[in-house]
Length: 477
Image 1 (cartoon, rainbow, N blue to C red):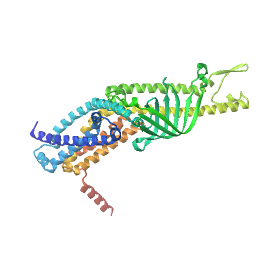
Image 2: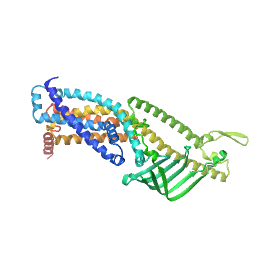
Image 3: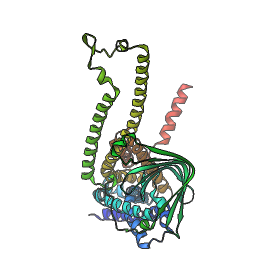
Image 4: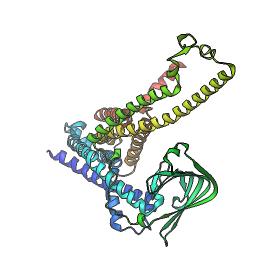
């Protein structure tokens, strides 16, 4: 390696490590701020909090590393250009691309490292931090209640539409399924709102519910009478549920029960999961289609039935052919029955539409995670190709203007990727495009800047633009 390559590499690595540690520290403080209510005041050992932060840090790398590469590359070549070192390099016959050689090799190596981090370390850290958070949630039950999904607390499952207030103790639109010792769900409670009240002295959690209904299925002693399914319904203004927290507070923080989310899987596991989920969804589509067809009753009309002295096949394209064999009162009853059947099928379709949408979204999340394993490592190389020539063009080093430019470009890159991934979740766009669109847009910009910097040209030649506009304006006059 030549002296010049060592000099540029040393300058780049100094800035790279400094920015990486600084930005990582900022994101760690942000993480602490995000989970301050979950970690503070719960008599949790500092060792547990430190473990949580250590497990959470690898998940910050996809955010920290691209910004670090962009900042380090802009400032390295900005310093060289500002101090006229870059001009001396060019005068000796060394091109911009040749001066980037050592850093290009480093960033290719960095891509490989980031791939192994993304494929191995991040899934492992997600597994560890997710299980640790679940155990922390047992110490504080309000943490265990996520909005919009059913959450298991003690012997019941609870779902809330919204949490707010101090410690997120106020709840809205509550549904509770209580489970007995035989694992039967016989009691369902729905309430407009409620509140979590924690009695630390007696280790009891009280859930106070307001304006709701309690539904209970009565289990018949005679098995033959279960077909009648008797139940009770009670309206209440206020209702209180008490949960013993002694067992919940007895938490083993080393317990690891959850290991099957898409963020915990590597490329091989994601491939298998995607294939399995897609096959399962196709079977569900097929089974639903067949069952729906049978429930409509069309199948019955396509069979034959006996008229007096003859066997005729019903023509389902003409409803009069079907109804003319019945008297007026029977026709009216048949039409009402058909109308009710259609309304039931429409409601069933709406329910299944939501169910299939959720399953498709889960598959899309797996696919997005799969593509991110490759897109994130490549982004470090692309952002270097973007940042190095940009630093040579702006000819500014140090903090200030280069940092502003880097932040603007990174925010554009990050938000573009975020919006694309959100669109990919609901199948608005391909999951491949959702993960790669930021790289696809940044790469041409980087190549364009590389050509401009190699030719000692600015990003846009403002003088030429104004001159062409002025000439056109003069000609028109």
